[in-house]
Length: 258
Image (cartoon, rainbow, N blue to C red; front, top):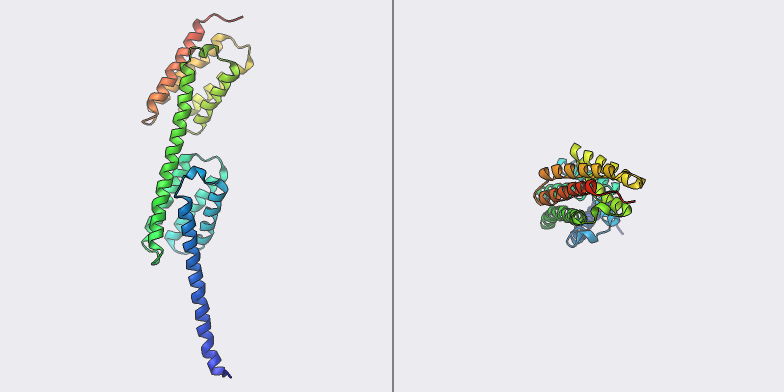
């Protein structure tokens, strides 16, 4: 028979045992989450579904945001920013890349205070997050290059002045979508000129000189933007601008088709 005294002595031990088991479970859960996160970003990021990525971010934010530690709260704030970008479905790869790299840096700093057994995975996670951010930016740059190359090919075509209006509008839309992802007044001015060109083409009865003038203006503005573009984009954008200006001049010289 257990005495009252023995029962009282046993109770704290059981409580301590349960608390230890709870702590162990919590640590095990964190290890599991780290493993899953590391596996998710260790491959081709383009293959990760947006919902899965958001789910991972949500779980980590829920785990961290109640912490009173300043560095953990700061990391949770960055995760919140990433949440908003992913939920918006409008963020560019470069915007997501910038936040991911920042989270990677914060995670690497945080790893120095991580518990034994978690330090190495957290360090690895920080490194992979930075690499993931860089990869996303590079992938978007490659996509932009391909789109600009497509525009240049169309602009180099000798048939550009007599291009089918629907195909021309499709090309304008492609260029317009690229510009919408850029910041700066000169980009917006070019976007406005593209809109005017698109409207002229859609009317169907616009005079050739009207289209030629709009096309030349788009070409000049594109060339100007190319001179300020980052290395790797400068030559292609300037070439596109010159070809568009040339097409506008060709259209001015051509006789109207009846």
